[in-house]
Amino acid sequence: MQRHGLLIILSSPSGAGKSTLARRLRAWDPHIGFSVSATTRSPREGEEHGREYYFYDREAFEDMVEKGELLEHAEVFGNYYGSPVAPVKKAIEEGHDFLFDVDWQGGQQIRDSVLGKYVLSIFILPPSISELERRLVSRQQDSLEVIENRMKASRDEISHWPEYDYVLINDDLNETEAHLKTIISAERMRISQHPHLVDVVRDLNREFEERE
Amino acid sequence: MQRHGLLIILSSPSGAGKSTLARRLRAWDPHIGFSVSATTRSPREGEEHGREYYFYDREAFEDMVEKGELLEHAEVFGNYYGSPVAPVKKAIEEGHDFLFDVDWQGGQQIRDSVLGKYVLSIFILPPSISELERRLVSRQQDSLEVIENRMKASRDEISHWPEYDYVLINDDLNETEAHLKTIISAERMRISQHPHLVDVVRDLNREFEERE
Image 1 (tube, each protein chain N blue to C red):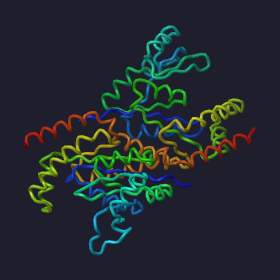
Image 2 (cartoon, rainbow over the protein chains, first blue to last red):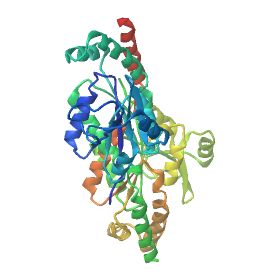
Image 3 (cartoon, chains in turn purple, cyan):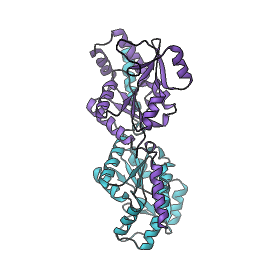
Image 4 (spheres, each protein chain N blue to C red):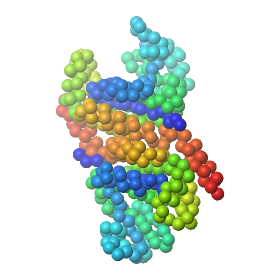
């Protein structure tokens, strides 16, 4: 009998290790799906509709928002990004988990969506702000100004920790990875993931009746 | 920094393996406390007040009920049994988990108590009713009449499965034990168990302020 899939929300300020942890979870269980986002930005070379992104124009995107066809969406640097409900709904009904690497606003929208009751939300905290800054600087990916903006956004992001089911302090990556696996393994057993229990108990009751 | 303790409720029809599982959990983690019950029945030889039971007369017991000093209580064969709040509250505030081996009524009372938000509730189902009966008969502990009464009570007990956080089908004892350990390990990380996160985030915010 099949369980229901989880909708795993992983949020953190940038630099806390979220992307690495998401990658490791996927290596641990390749059945965990990652949502393909819808976007209004133009496709880059080699990007395919339905693989990297679903590409839409603004009108089509806004239409999807209005019809409630997105689990969450946000506007970033003038482009819309969002997660279509339909593929996620189908996958979790078939027993696959889905991982969403979103900020607190995305998390809030998913929690408030029609699939909200399947959400498992985990927030990753950095061990310290100096460590967070060190990680952002050491990836040599962003200018100092961008880093400064990320640090400001981090403070806002962190303030939303109480909205999550679990909060992990990512001091040691391997330890945090192990904790995430334990949490996901347990939450997969939660009663809400097992709609077939209704049938299990119906069968037990039938057995009781046959005894009488 | 210290976590808060869990109030673990384990319920099942008799014969589903609950007592064995509770014993194994205690062997796994001897820090998991078991509640010493209050009762109005007379002490048997060798029983000590505060060790096997807290012994009270009916008036004192009813007074405790009225004052809300019991997490749950029930009358069984003319005697009261109940779990005093105070020692459990003290222990979970000090970071120890507590295991309650109670029926659905006890579970419901504990969930509705002042300590309800620390509850983790798990229901153990037998793989089949014939297996449940086989286990009751094979322990050679009860008369056929008592077994018949237990079977009737089992049906009622099982009907309350939807009230629990997790429902496990105890087909294989070792597997169920492993599942219980995973669930408890994960739930210990849940945000409600970590009141000190407030201080962690306060420290992070102080670091942000020092940067500015």
